[in-house]
Amino acid sequence: MDGATVVRTRAERIGARIIGTLDVLRELGAFAVITLGVTLTKFNASKRVVHPLIFTQIWSAGVRLLPMISFIGAALGLVIVGQTVALLSRVGAQQYIGTVMVTVIVRELGPLVTALIVLARAGTANVVELGTMRALGEVEALESLGIDPIHYLVMPRVIGLATAVFCLTTYLVLIAIAGGYLFAFLQDVPLTLTDYLAQLNNALRWEDFALFALKSILFGVVIAVVNCYHGLARPLNVEEVSQVTARAVVESVTACVLLDAFFLLGYLF
Image (cartoon, rainbow, N blue to C red; front, top):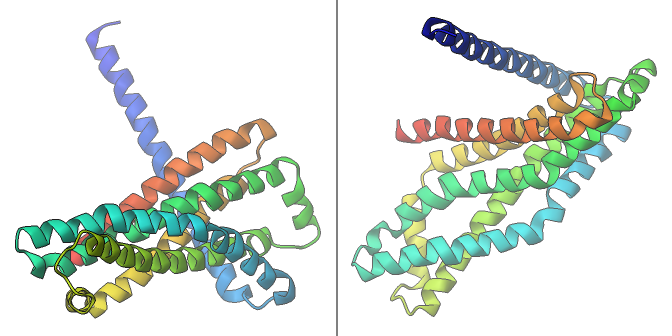
């Protein structure tokens, strides 16, 4: 095989991958638009059946993760916030404590870490559940009964995961802030609780609260949409569920990181 053939083959492979990626993005976008339309038009339809499913998702993706989120929040507080406070106090840069904490915990690590935990615990479970339902023909059975799978299966997961990620992120940030001050207090850092909270208050802006809420909610929406798409969009065999789950996890992580980068540009400008 000559050099020109090798270059052409590689170019064809790269082109095929790009086209495949664009097709997936197009299908994901269409799935997201359909889900949004169903959510807006059918939110109160069959609410005695659908609304309890939303609370079930909030319980499984939110309340059941509180112990893990508490541990991760305490770890972030002790390892990152506490050491940062101690280091800045040691070099005489206490005035930057609030800015560093808001940037690292509130804007970046809090929402992203929480989203990844929810993805690992609840997102993968949703892909497996929906993929198995699709493989066993249960989705077609719902359609034959006149039940919209998007309304019955997808909408509760989207709303439930968005709510869960927002609430868990808020909880994790509060635990991290409290744990950071506790670590600083145990290290005899000369910083009172009043000064600690005052620095946080001075560093926070109203845009931080708005972007924090929007980012957390969108993380939950992205995770739910990607996972539900891979579980329902195509006919599956039972043997393919594990492969689809792995693909959904990779794409969800990629989407969350890209979304985080987009919000980073918003913070900068």
